[in-house]
Image (tube, rainbow, N blue to C red; front, side, top):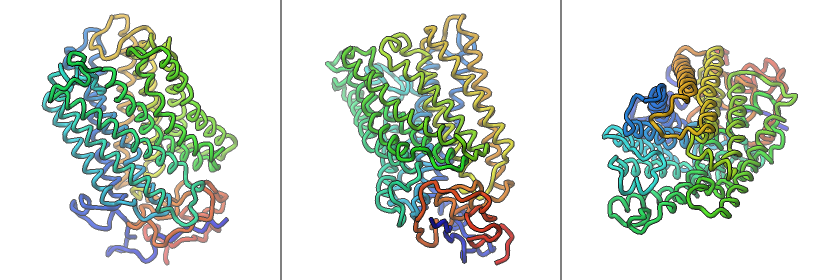
Amino acid sequence: MSMTPLTATAGRLTSEGEPLNYLNNGHGLKSWLLTKDHKRIALLYLFSVSFFFIIGGIFALLIRINLLSPEGLFNPDTYNRIFTAHGIIMVFLFLVPAVPAVLGNFLLPIMIGAKDLAFPKINLLSWYCYVVAGIFLTVALIAGGIDTGWTFYTPYSTSYSNSNVLLAGVGIFIAGFSSILTGINFIVTVHTMRAPGMTWFRLPLFIWAHYATALVIMLGTPVLAITLSLMALERVAHVGIFDPAMGGDPVLFQHMFWFYSHPAVYIMVLPAMGVVSELIANLARKNIFGYKFVAMSSLAIAVFGFLVWGHHLFVSTQSIYLGIIFSFLSYAVAIPSAIKVFNWTATLFKGSISYDTPMIYGLGFIGLFLIGGMTGLFVAALGIDVHVTDTYFVIAHFHYVMVGGSLMGFLGGMHLWWGKITGRMYPEYWARAAMVIQFVGFNLTFFPQFILGYLGMPRRYAAYPPEFQVLHVLSTAGATILGLGMLITIIYFIWSLKNGERAPANPWGASGLEWRTSSPPPTENFLETPVVTWEAYEFAPIETMDVLGYPGDPGKPSQPVPAEHGTED
């Protein structure tokens, strides 16, 4: 198979003699705020989601500080507003958009050989929708906060809460449109803009995961928009939709909310799974075991994800027979996830594994996701769920899946493609140290919460019996360690922008079109339309990699060398 790389930098220099790329092709704030380049929009998203991640993390630390003592530091009403702020920011402004909006936006067109997404203006609009949504939610928090929890359960949210429910609902409604616009762009781009030779089963698994995620976004997010609209209508016009005092049904809200919000778990974790597939394949230098099974498992997760929302209603007057059906389906949805984990593990077997930071994050994802997935089987069982529902067991479970999985995938992807995005490499020693600190801190934070929930500690309580204090102190200590690890990562990423080593086009010896263009890429990604004649994960022998990391004869670069490498033409 031909493995000839594609010219990306020849003849494209700035006035200073530097290779022209998307970062230096147009300066000034206006050029960024009006950009239609998917790579710049991805960076705009990166700055935005990082800001809200920090804010959400601050609220998380406040929660843990409050729970250091049984009496609590804050009164119950203040505590309600703190954990609601944490949940809303983390779910709607970080976990849902982080991987698709940042890594998906940057990489999806390059990975399929396209110059941009199908609708560049709509892509920019999606970021503006996200920013407007963030402003609405920020104003809602500053103006007094929300006290309903991130689930906005009725009839409290529609009739009894005196907090900023409407303002927050509008913000989430607009954030939903941001996701929908991104989903439309991804689907149309994958269908219509693949490079010649890029067949469906030559697509990287990163693309399959984002394609499946876009389908979930398109089918599920409108239901959330309708649900929030009905909630607002009842709150403003006092129409009896959910409030039983007015003839409504609060369980109807739960059905509608979870019909979106359980598939939303896969909006958060499916893209991270796509990242992990790239980490495992490229840093084990081995084709993914059972490529088609892993690809189809992404679509299976997207389908099954819409069939299990009822397990959130096991104790909400739902028929026991319907509960049995949802319990069975909840076990079934674990099968495609288990296929991924098995195939990743089989890929590692006898692979040429490089334990660089991205691979360590990939292994961390597998570890945390396994714990989250296995404990999901507990809450899918009717009898056990009756005991642990609305306890810290559930909090620990969904944090292992949603936060642990998404965060490990996001950070692993950022480390794998950081050189491609910025043109600079990060310090490997500090990156490994930060990952280990994060992994230890995360487990110390949330594993004790499984025990707390099993012992009967309910979630969302500002105070608790003294016998639970030791486990809460351990959890708070873990959150502090996790925060330290995240702070180290932020610091060395910022440091690397100026002081990091220049990134070659392919620092990992990886496969894929994104590694066949310069670091950072030119504005148009490729000066020539690529023609794909190789399979998704086809690796050249490591001894035949040239000085830029391209396949070819040793010492004979198969692509013109950019100026920063100091090689004469």
